[in-house]
Length: 295
Ligand SMILES: [Mg+2]
Image (cartoon, rainbow, N blue to C red):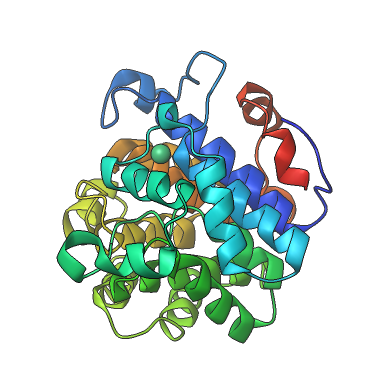
């Protein structure tokens, strides 16, 4: 992978997100398949997907402007859209409209008959933003919401992004925080929503060792919605804040939208220091980040 300053929590988080995304995308048979249970690393190279492509736009917008400049973010999403990266069909159509000059302010709220999208796409790309602002949690919440509504204006889509960004901020600034405190701290900053109820459900399941139990209660990403994806990622992150590998192999046993669950979980955990970091062999396996991310 290309290297920028890996001592910055936001960069660590971006790498953690990209490697998680790429790892998840290579696991063709998740669940209790022998390759997963025996933790055999997939063949290389691991190519990343839309999660990473969009996260690079979030990161580069922050690096360039120091905050989420929404028009620039929408332009970057559209300019860098690569249809071979696994975008959902609605997301791809939306970004193509932006590319033709339509405004996100009109297109995004009109999606899905006027509800806006509550997909997991705003959550999947936002962890580095949480790590960027770190201790300034008010800024984390505000800027995460601003980054979300460029494509996901439904309150659940926004809540998912806020939850993930706050989680990454806590991972970056409070290493060693107990799992229960971590989830409570995240939930306290998430607006009332299905996403928040799911995080409270994850809190109740912290002592469940079987990831399939957690998946049954919290959702597995099967519907690719924020409420069906973010609570499981929170459960995985909370239980494994010090171990990136353990979190992602556990995800592989249960998650449906595996690249996105691993992108979210990996982006949160890798924001933390030291033992939370991405294993060197995994970094080596992953496709390089695009040159344009560094600005
Ligand atoms: Mg993807």
